[in-house]
Image (cartoon, rainbow over the protein chains, first blue to last red):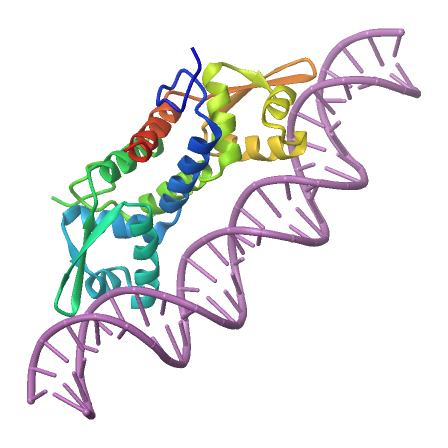
Amino acid sequence: MIDHCNTSAESIPCDEMLYDLAELYKVFGDSTRIKILCILFAGEMCVQHISEMLSVSQSAVSHQLRILKGARLVKYRREGKTVYYSLADDHVREIIGCGMEHISE
Amino acid sequence: MIDHCNTSAESIPCDEMLYDLAELYKVFGDSTRIKILCILFAGEMCVQHISEMLSVSQSAVSHQLRILKGARLVKYRREGKTVYYSLADDHVREIIGCGMEHISE
DNA sequence: TTGATGTATGAACAGTTATTCATATGTTTT
DNA sequence: AAAACATATGAATAACTGTTCATACATCAA
């Protein structure tokens, strides 16, 4: 049987999938973005607040949120002037949890 | 209770852990490395063979294997002139599996 | 020892990336 | 409308990264 991009660990996924996978991990491969995601574990938060918690400029946070949004890892909600970001789904927790396991050996 | 770098998704991990986590994901954030790891799903394999399967130079593969080794994702075994690489443990499968789930939505 | 083979590694180059700065967009208040 | 505030974005810069090339190292065969 030919493998068409399945998710089994027993066969090699197709090139396109591996490329997409690398792109996804690239997003997690920056500590500012990881921190933003972890902050959002607690619930939705506005850009300014995230910026203060990380001691990173508003612009930098906004740029990174754009990337997280592009990877469908976060979603947002506008309320007046303020934009609240939150985790898109539970995959983020799972992926970060997976990595934690490897690190804390 | 104070959080000292635990793995729970309910509290924000400490800075050092988040940094290490980002470093780990950086390793997965390159399609050549991801491909090498996926090839190793099937079992151990020598550098030359990996190089041929990926159509990537021996040097490039060796450089990447060095990075994978540094992240403790692969181990190796020398047999004469040949060096056989294999996955260090099952974390690699888990982490890649996690990412796959997010991609194939 | 010499040559052949498999792998590792340092330097250099091209491409990528995260931050900063300036400024634009969108929203509310006066 | 104008000012104030929150966020987004484009350009520029510095730092980082993956590949290539040349070469070194390690092992085996003759």
